[in-house]
Length: 278
Image 1: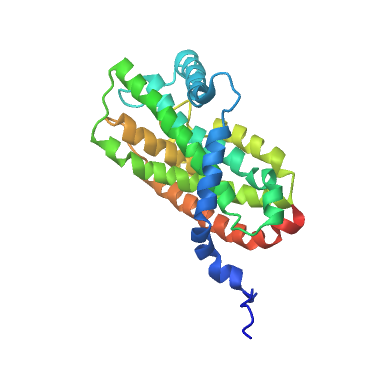
Image 2 (image 1 turned 90 degrees about the vertical axis):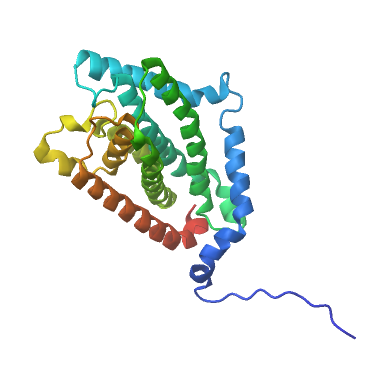
């Protein structure tokens, strides 16, 4: 009599490391589901819904334009109107800030999922970053409206914008997975992340041009990876006389890649204990 075949589960030492990237592909449908879920519930039961993705950067742009462009009298970059210059920086900044805020809490918010089933936990912060990328494209439509309103036409540099968007994604993702993993073990980071975002807004060239920074401090200033991202966005969108500070851009790229690579390494290493400490 033939016995019914019973599947066996074999646990191999080091299997998680060897199979981790394959498992990410195997669980791709879960990633799609979680990203789509976050998109659907993001503005659910709000009075104006997805308009929040537009209102927040627009209001911030208005405030920065009045304070830095009007009261402080800081110059714009090239021939671009000051609101266009500010909004060109608000796009990558808002994407970074929202991704960091939400991804750092993505593991804590899905504690039941983490503690009950196996899946590559990297899916959780990744889906949060993807959702904020949707907001980015919605907000980008306002930039087009501003350009039409001010009759500002970008030049050929606009075709390089996807490269700087990729740099922005790498930067946001690197910081997100670092803080996401740290937040599981040290809950203090739920208070640290809002401070980092608020402080980062002040030290990043969002409401002003980085060209106002004295030349001798430009390289030091570029140790903030967001400086290279924002300057790249402005160079691609504003065109004209806007110049890139190449040493600073290369430094920002190197730091963004370092944070991205070490963030993945640290996240995967810490993932084994998430279910125990969360």
